[in-house]
Image 1 (cartoon, one colour):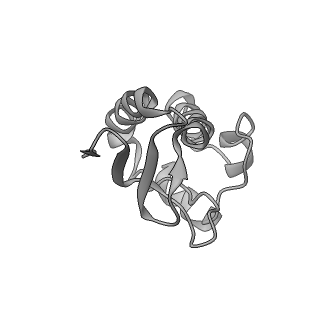
Image 2 (cartoon, helix red, strand yellow):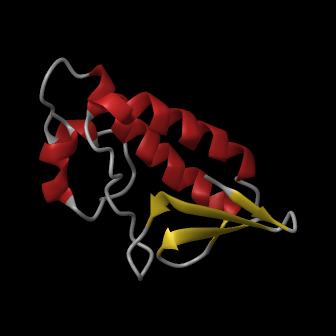
Amino acid sequence: MLVKINDKFIHVADEVMLTNDGKPLLPGLEGRHVLQRQLDSWNYMKGYCKPEITIICGHGPVMEGGKLEKDLQNRIEYAKAIMEANGAISYEDATKNCHCDFVGKPWHDHFAR
């Protein structure tokens, strides 16, 4: 769920989670069965990736919309790699098209089953 505030702020809740110092947390995908729904949500959020919009995450610091676009693309690449894998996929293979190092690597084995 996204909450739009005065056309200047978007609260994205847990759709995008960061550490307190702004590092991207590994997306909590809860297994392959929710991947398409998550991808649809992140693709929808791309419409709010504008410098004049401030993004309020459920966890972590606020960010400007342009930075959100890069973050979303990394999450999308990660989820797509899991969806396209035939069976288990390593963290390294799942993130080879990402331009970040997600915090929470140990969770990957649970998400990528």
